[in-house]
Length: 245
Image (tube, rainbow, N blue to C red; front, side, top):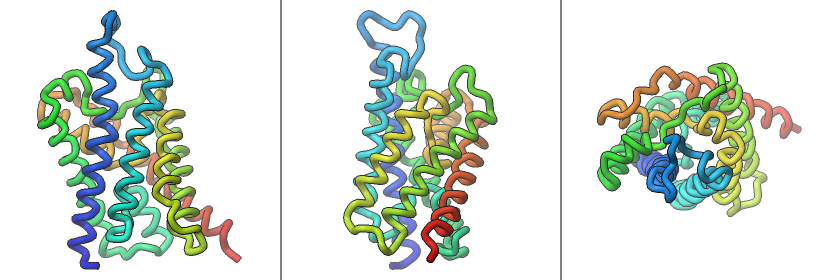
């Protein structure tokens, strides 16, 4: 398959991920604002709905990721995550010359997902929902957030290696297993870091917020680059070691 077509598939796949995943987080905040009785403290996800908020958001991510893997996986591999691309490159499963085009495509898709979400929902997607942007929750330090993102992405990449990359994996299960894994991780660490696991997933909402007039959160962006890349690369090498004869 031509590189252009595979990159285009990455654009589309990451667009779907960011439109429906962070979009669900933004909608959750917008619903909370309009709750009856209204929320007097103007606080968001996890407060009014408790764990139910994160279950709903996690399922939105799970279904979006499953849909992308089953529809576009055979074309581009459905990385839709720079950390996954880098981990596959680090373990010599992905060519060096295609790493930058893939990551560029993922960032474009993420930006499109956020901007088109605003086009559909309106400015409250930013002023109230923040485009579902991730940031450490109160009481969580920078280092704690990096560790949480690394652990979450470690689990995600370990599952990807076992059900999608390994040639001995049973066919047909990758999409649903990977999707549900992401959903489960979000339920657990969502109230710690927002559970990004993916630099592109955070990049799109950050870009949309900063350009259209939302909160500037770029100081937190390294968390969602360093943590996911460390976790994904470590998981890929560990899996290779465990699975070696």
